[in-house]
Length: 266
Image (tube, rainbow, N blue to C red; front, side, top):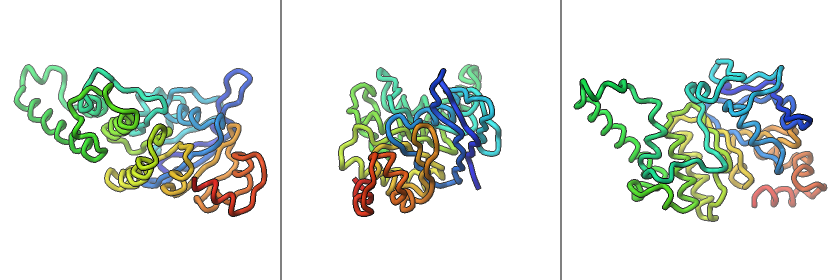
């Protein structure tokens, strides 16, 4: 069953057609890759899904059986669609733990006046949430840095923190925008394991935009390929990496099958 579906999704900026008639389905509890050369429209597509951009007339976006076309970002996030950003958006002055608590905040159950009337219960609930968020930090490997300001983390650690904050929002679907950017080769391997564990541990559906093709090929059940804002291919990793249209889009020339496979696994 599809958790996300787009039909004829389009977006133009003046005379530039950034996304043109892209239709796809993302099945529940699957990892779906979205790849394409630089400027192919991947980030624009994410921004349309999450309400950052308004789609053109005639577009349709359905999430969890609800029409979210043109809805504001906070509405879509409230339905369970969370994302990370290629350009990290963390609170550098806050601790690592406080950053993930910010992600959980929309799920706070008590009213702003509750501390005045039932302070002990509020403190109890806060402690439970902090323990859950600390477990999340353990999962992403940042527990030992829980109390330091986020600004003191390395680039790779900040990217992990952004992932943790997105998970803290308890989404049904997680959109990962270039999660491998800035990571060392060893951490890239860890990222692939993390993506697969995330899906099962948190019962997530995941959509990944990633320029490191090895990550997409190793983790995704289905891959959609964009080029110049249009869908040019879709299927299993095996199908996509052997699709001449995909190779032509990435490399601009025909290659032998063995060269295609090498390009997709580096």
